Length: 175
Image (cartoon, rainbow, N blue to C red; front, side):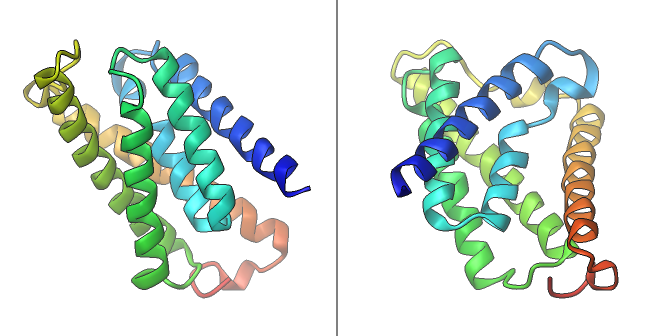
C-alpha cells in the first residue's frame, strides 16, 4: 500500500512538471516567470510527510529533466536541494502552520530555488550544457509580479484549505 502511495506522489510530481512547462512557459509577460515547481514544492513541504515530499520531488525533477535543455538530473538536483532547504526551514524555523509561515516558506524556497538554479546552470555551462541563466536579462518588475503571483497562489490555496477545514478564525495562527 505504501508503494501505491509513493507512486501516486511520483505521478503528481510528473503532472506538476508538465504543468509548469505547458501552462506557464508559453505565456508572455510575468506569467512565464512564475515558478510552478516552487509553488508545488512549498505546498508539499507545508502539507505532506517526508516520504510524499521525496516522491513528489523525484517525479517533478525527472519530469523537468526529460523536457529540459539542461544536462540530465540537473532539475532533480535543483528541486531536491530546494525541497531540503524548505523541509529544514519548516522543521526548525517556521514550525507553526499559519498563513505567514507558508508565505515566508514560499519566499525562502523561491530564493533557494533561484540560487540552486543559478549554480546548476552555471555548472552546466562549464561542463558543456547549452543553457546559462541570464540574470542580467531579467526584467525586475516582471520578476516581482511573478513572485507576487506565486505568493498569492500560496495564500489562496491556504485560505481554501482552512475554510474547508472550518477553521476560519485560525487562519493566522496554528492550524
